Image 1: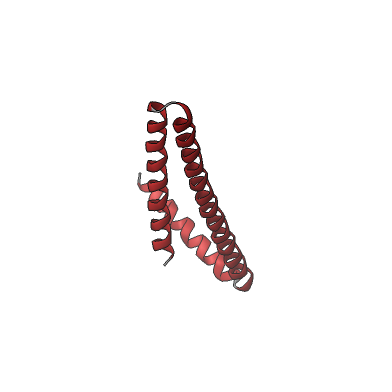
Image 2: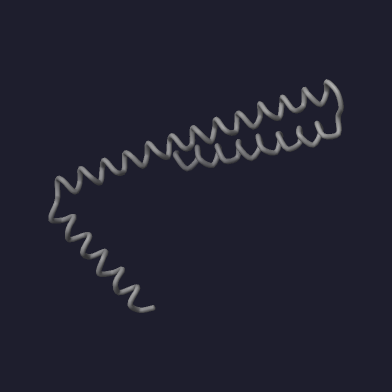
Length: 100
C-alpha cells in the first residue's frame, strides 16, 4: 500500500515537472500576455510539485519518528536482548570488514 502511493506520487511529480518544462518552453517562444499566462501556469505546476514533495517529506519524517519510538520501546522492554543483538551485529560487521 505504502509502496503504491510512493510510486504514484513519483509518477505524479514526473508528470507535473514535464508539464512545467513544456509550459516554460512554450513561454519562451510566446510573447506578450500569452507568455505571462504560460509562465503563471508553469509556476503553479511547480508549486504543486513542491507541495507534493513536502507531503512526501512529512510522511517520511513521521515514519522515521514511529520507527525510532518503536525501537526505543523495544530497547526499554528488552535491554539484554538488545545488547545481544547489537553485539551480534557488531561481530558480523567486524567479520565482514576483516575479510576485505
